[in-house]
Every structure is written in structure tokens, then in C-alpha cells.
Length: 220
Image (cartoon, rainbow, N blue to C red; front, side, top):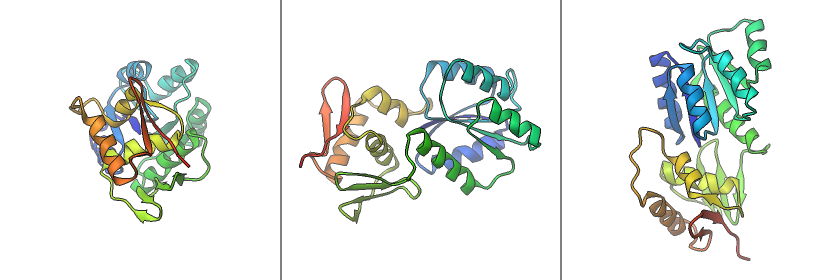
């Protein structure tokens, strides 16, 4: 999953980057509202973590513009503005959830998981398909009941495919999920990750759709 963090406090931003990066998310970080709005208009993200007190463009104004453009991206506001009227204004502007600074890191992780799950139309956290069970709350993968060790990138790739079983996920979508702006991407990295997943799970589980992408396929 690719997340965009918009936070101008470097200490807070670095703390969030470490916390969520450790969960396997790809996280890009910007420090002003104008840059964030440009990024949101030009690239695809799965979740926006938004501070309100931003330079160049206030977070609340950014949120208003985002929703006016019919962007349904889940938004978690993270701010020190803790007044009831301010929380109501943020939610009415289109925020999906509101977290007050200072916050507990575990609560942040749980709220991120819940918003991502809700955006995918799932009530339960567990993903299951063709003998594979994936639990985002602890990043555990089981195959026919046996735990399978995954690297963070292997886990994220499998998660993307598990969310849409039986449907093709394009190479572009997978790449944008796995790599942030700071990452150097080798041309064959995606193929290597798919190869590793097939070895760890089943060679027949992931089908290549040539020139387009990949899908999970269950053969009875």
C-alpha cells in the first residue's frame, strides 16, 4: 500500500515514516499543501495522512479541494487542533478519521489498517484465497495453515493481489504501490518478487497476463 504523508514538522514526520515503514507500507512524505495537492492530482495513493497546519496551503483547504475534485481517497487527519469545532470542521470537509497529536503509534497503525480495510469494502481484516491466509494486523501469511516468511515487499505485493483475487492488477499499479519517490527500482524487480511468491506458495497461484499484469487464480 502506498501512503502519502503531508506533515511540516520534521520530527513528527520522521517518526511516522519509521513507524509505518516498519509495517511494510510505501510512504512518501511532503511538507507543504501545494506540493501535496500536485502529487495527489498526478499520482495514485491508497491513503492520505494529513496535518492541518501546513505552509503554502492549509490542510483543511487542501481537503476541501480534494473532495471538490471528487477524489475518494481515504484521509486521516493528524493534527494538534483538538477543539470540538475544529474536529467537526475536519470531518465535514471530508476527513474519514481524526487523530490528535500527541498520539500512540499503535493507535496510528490501527487507524491506518481500518481505513485501508474500509476503502477496500472489507469488514474483516483477514484475507483468504486458495489456501492463502493474510492477516494485515500482524502481517502474517499462512499457506494451508503453515506460516510463510515474507520480505516486506513480497508481503505488500501479495496483499495487493489478495485484495483483488481473480482480477488483473496492472504492473503500473503494483509498481506504484511498492516503490516511493526515494526508491531506486531495478527493471526486473517485480518479476523477481512474483517468482519468489510462486516458490513460497504455489507456482499455479499467480498467473501472468502478458503485457498487462498479474492475478491470483484458483484452479480446482
